[in-house]
Image 1 (cartoon, rainbow, N blue to C red):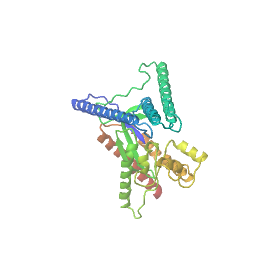
Image 2 (image 1 turned 135 degrees about the vertical axis):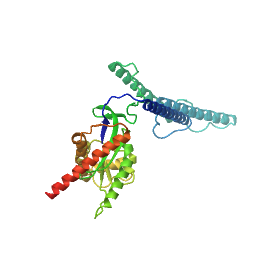
Image 3 (image 1 turned 30 degrees about the vertical axis):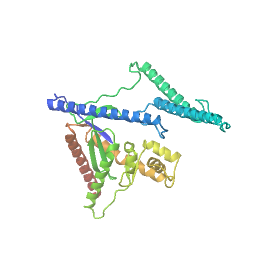
Image 4 (image 1 turned 60 degrees about the vertical axis):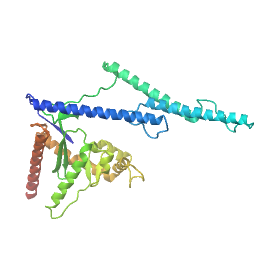
Length: 354
């Protein structure tokens, strides 16, 4: 996928743009505060549950590992003390009635028992991990001269007053103010679907792009003598997620990493046949991409969409939008895509006739 951004043209921002930016920032901060409060509430409830009963699975986000380990240890200590009290009560009752002491091992050590040992080991591991993290933070602080305790400060929400629709996007060459463009390209290098969003992540654009690509294919079939179905769709690693792997639609290959790593894994650790029974969607896709057939097919992705990306940027000169606003930039992108498709059609017809 490619990210394009608008030109850096200077003009003064009007009051409506500034008011819009302020309103959006206030709404974003309120949403972040609500999410943080919900996260803290869930963490508190989890610790309360740990103090009462064993909780399987990983710790939820936001739960302090040391606090959870301490809650677990206190729960096991209370349980162990309950066992001691029950044993002492049974011994006292037996002596009062003139009966022998209860059979079995004497329960008297408050820190004994396998569960207590595991709980103490978990707390020690949590404390060691916290100390290691703190030491790494101190080392980072010493190296970079920062005085923020080694913690990465959250970037405050930002808006561009000359184009409030745009967002800060990460690229290989740094950060830009712009949009995230999505392209679906056919095997003959025709742009069938495109999208433009203010979200730097590609995973959330998958369902919409796939749906609109299917709609385009259905429309094209109404103008064909022989209808054709979408074959295997090839997606780059930006779309890799459980939801996208299992989303309804045509067959697909989504890379879990860089293409060269996929090819190397397929060569050094090849697979064959269907994935193992009970494999998760991620495991099934990794297995499939290690098969020679899928690895060979996935090689075609780079030769299909990447040349179109290069043409859009270098031949059509659309590395920066000339307009402002998501709707205007989407129109500019559509115009460029239409120009590309017309050139592609002309080249194909000219080559065929000659």
